[in-house]
Length: 398
Image 1 (tube, rainbow, N blue to C red):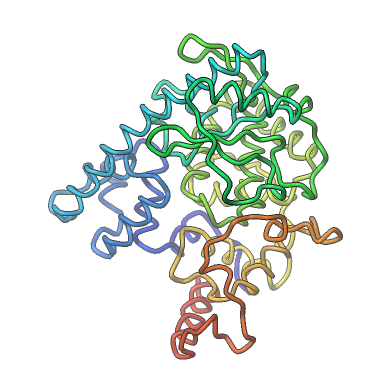
Image 2 (image 1 turned 180 degrees about the horizontal axis):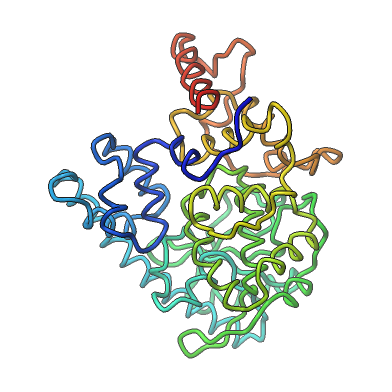
């Protein structure tokens, strides 16, 4: 029987590139911890690609500059320095675009709740340099959508055009700013048909707090609710795969905010219970603890389904290798989702309300169907056999 994972054992399941990228998410590093990273086994193109995909360029560049002399190739340092410069410029553009949006909506008398990375940035001294983000997200009442879009257009934001249909989404078509920046006006925090406790915009506004940002009054979620939403968004909406670096980074920052409120982890547990999201929040926070971004020993271990018995250790390992785009991840989407559904303790099963059935956009590589013979799409069977061997060796031998 596979033993329950410890943080050390969990991180040992990661590829060398993922271990370096993980360390970049965890804030300050001692010289000893940086020197102990598996620099000699890093595949540098993979690391640069992962950092770019996760928008972790500034954080990884800072870590690479602390590496022992000579372990990071010069061309990698130069490439990452360029990526970091672009990221810093983009952060200043995001801040300016967010300021325009705040002013436009306030002038129109529209109440907006800022979400995700933008909300985090508005509370941190480093501002939008806190981490990279793909767009700006905010929640407004559905009836205010037309007026909000009109106010934003007057301020310089533009409609993105027709393109994708958004009936199955919980936000309207994004609006765009110069340089390709995007803003999404949400009418809910989860897609229509989700299995969680129904919540109106007013419900979410009661969970908000007012802060001052750049001389402006803005609304963001209270720390416990911010962490709960981030956990559900990663573990359920993204199935514990997409946005892993951002989630680990944010839990590291948000845990400080939760402690600072004095409410403690009980406030996160209450928020999770109120939302009916114990399973995804429990698994997400367990994952964060395994990765080292949470140091609390009293998280939601009782909320995690499927950890008992012979298969519990295997389920934990499936959660670890499915993240970070691991080369040891399951080559079968069906196999991976079987374990994910098992961990959700029946959440959404009755309504068949799983994220991939609710309009979630997935990469083309993830939409290939399994033929039942272990072959995805047109890949040669020998490649699939090797991938299965690598996957099973990692989860059964770790």
